[in-house]
Length: 312
Figure 1: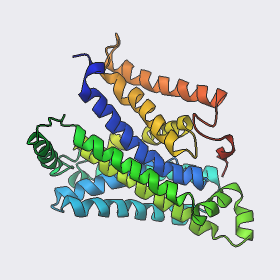
Figure 2 (figure 1 turned 180 degrees about the horizontal axis):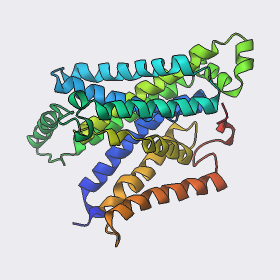
Figure 3 (figure 1 turned 90 degrees about the horizontal axis):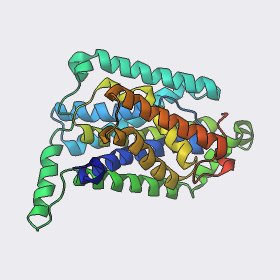
């Protein structure tokens, strides 16, 4: 069957899009609200993914492992933020990408604990059995579902719930204080705003959300490898943010679907090119798309021009 007509193809691409959407919602909090130019955001996703996988493979029940993994991602955000948030924006960006790479290299070299380059196998634990139980329940009622549907639905339910939570927070004094810090730290401090604490809270919240995306990624992939968490993942996140629009939650959803189709979908299509050239082509397409957006609509599809404050 033509991949474009296969439900499994679209289910996979949309699940990847949902994982990206959750990941970028965390980035939206850090950059869109607090003005934190975090180039190491993928590290928080890695903490969530590997913490989930390591706990599950060591016998911790999934319902306990998942919230603990999200909490560890938030804690890692705090540990990164404590010594770095007083740095100027561009220095902070450099430090965060370095921290992300240090974490990835540690994962890669801790062969006994993480599997290293051989990967952490069966990191999703009993998810396959749970998935089959869900499918059997629907099958018993005469509804035959594709095996990818349960995770697709769970991923997007989580993405919508995170977006609704952030939308609710968006109406709070806390977010207005964050915006004040983003616009002018000195002015915010002068009127009594706890600038450092607000930035640390935003970093931790964004890290926790990225940790959730790491959990979903683990359920999707079942095995984890260090190369899954290279810096390119963060820059894909920035591409989604730029495309959809900084400050727009709906833009994150639309941008995630577009970028996920380009990144994950084109490998199913029949190109008269070798596999490695197709892999390179998809990033060329993303790069051209972002260049076009920055040239003709820098605020993104659904963003507002006044949200473009990247020089923290």
